[in-house]
Each structure stands twice: as structure tokens, then as C-alpha cells.
Image (tube, rainbow, N blue to C red; front, side):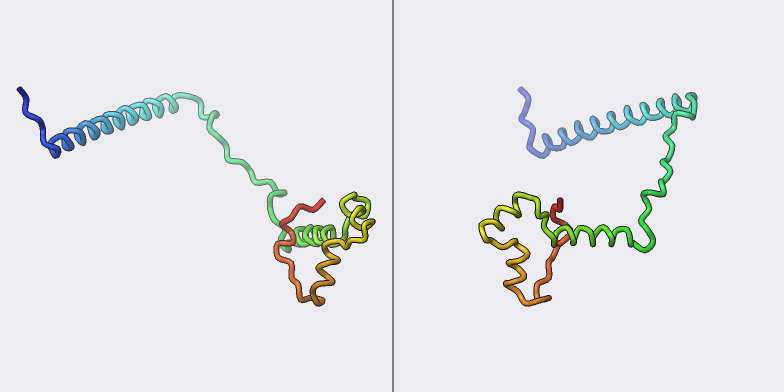
Length: 123
């Protein structure tokens, strides 16, 4: 009969199995990649990927005036409601105030600073 292995012997045996498995799979990958390199060298070089040329449209303007103009437009749209929308007309018909009008009545002038004013959805 075979004697039972101690825990340390079992652990050492398992560690050896894992390391052999990993080293054999690394050797296979290395040989595969070397074969691919050899094959790629014989193929045409025109199949290489080319680096994309940056478009001038992707560059930011030097003075950011375009972005500041867009932010100004968003602020204007947020501060002035669309009088034709049902969400504004119906509460006004019921005698209610618009959100911005309520805020202006609650706070002193220039005591309220809106945070994240350009992050909301403006239509």
C-alpha cells in the first residue's frame, strides 16, 4: 500500500504541476508568435495599419470663444422658458410660478449661485 502524502508534499506536487503547465503554455505561445512573425515578414507590408491623421475639426479653438458661446446659449435657454410648451403654459394658467420665478422670489438678487448649470438637459 502507498503511504498518504503529507500536506506539504501534496502542495509542492501541485505547485510543480501548475508551473510545468504554465511554462509549457508560454513556450507554445512564444513559438506561435515567432511563426506568425516569420509569416508576417513574408507578406506584403501594405496590410499594416496606418495612423489616423488628426482632423483640424478635432482641435479646440485657441480662445475657447466657441465653447463660451455655446455655454451662453445654454444659459439663455435655461433661463427663458419656451412659452409654447405645455409644461410651462398649464401651470401658468393655474396661477403658478415657473421654477426660476420662484427661486428669484425666495432669494435676494445675486445670493443664489447655480451649480452645474450647463449639465442639465436643455431643449
